[in-house]
Image (cartoon, rainbow, N blue to C red; front, side, top):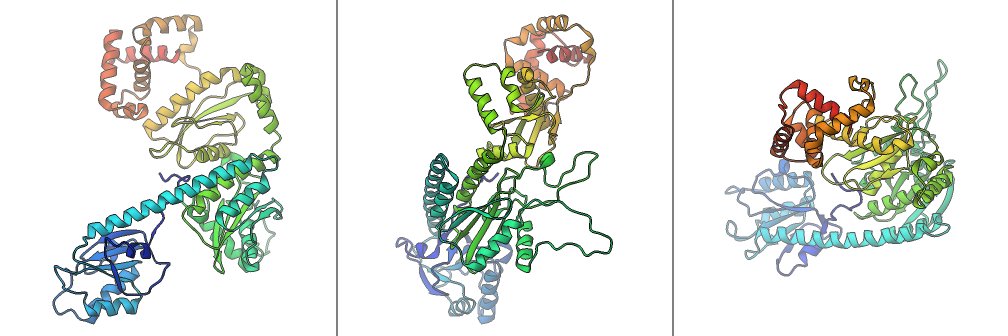
Length: 550
């Protein structure tokens, strides 16, 4: 899964590749455009390379595909297909097939505007590809350094007494553009940097309006449907915003945008038995007007604040820097509008000073809570922005992103529903003194959800047959029965997971993130230590009752 905190690898300027003296490349046709960039190098001897190109390639060929007596028509068709596929340039290797670059190929590249490079006999295609990757690595390192410095600068600005304007000022400086914070009533709260041209400024204002949450109304009979936005430019901005909305894979400047928080935790989702109150609105949008790159981010507080950015140029790291600023402004505007921020701070201080959780839980505003354990899709651990977005979607600021699992305390009156890109395990609703037990329930529910490939699983809270046994006697029996394996948590956890998944080796391995042979060895060890036949359903049932008491 792509990390939204890491900028994409920047492309390589063709001029930088031509400047490598060790390669000896020479431009012999095509435009001398300093803005030409290469995203990768690819060697192919296909007569029609179109199906194998993604766009932005330096295509390398020794002319093996060229038939004897090929005329201008062949080269015209060949070059036109490269241009149609989005190829950035063509590198032609001289020798051993051809002693010189065919004249008809030079003319075709000149006609179609495709840069043509002559690759000397001493330079291998592998050396050219390696040089491209080296230049890309250097550019990526420089971009990462730029992003890191910008993050530190923005964080320092956010720590100032009046942080909104300093954050916008640092953002405008780092992007060499203009940054503004729009209030829910569409007015500019603060701005910094040289303002964009009037047309771009107007288009950016319409872009921010397209991010406003809206409530649909039922028009009167015979009345025309309401307009999307009040003017043609605004309607265009709205359509572009809709195309960029909602997905973690698409957003302003191509960045996974911050998630928005709304009732029931999802865009346009309705509670069971209730009519939908909100229509889907985008969380980010981008556009380009008169050469000015525009982007707008709906801040995740759900109160209608929008960050707007206008820059004369767009580099690969801009989206990451803007995302960091959006995250900081989300927290800052949330503190401005949240009536519970002070209470949460008070609860944290009291906990740090030794107060037990039940004594400070009332400051958090709910009597009963769900514990939610969440794991993102893919192998990468969740980053802080993704964890914050998850908490926003669940309607809670009590988020712990430590390790590979994100833990969120959610008030019991906030429904927890499946979220795209996450696997969730949810505990029963408990009082604060039972939070540790709820944490265990959520962890087990998440393990089971991952094993069964379910998006969300809840811990069951209905009465069981074992509840008919007095708790003291049930606990004593469980301790006695499980005593042989109690000192080895790995065995206890494996047995519990294996039984909950009906003895499935593969699902247990997935849930515990171990090899299936490890599961077999642990279960065999449990059977030996417990002196029990784990194939017997009565034995399994008794062990399951005992494990539920631990």
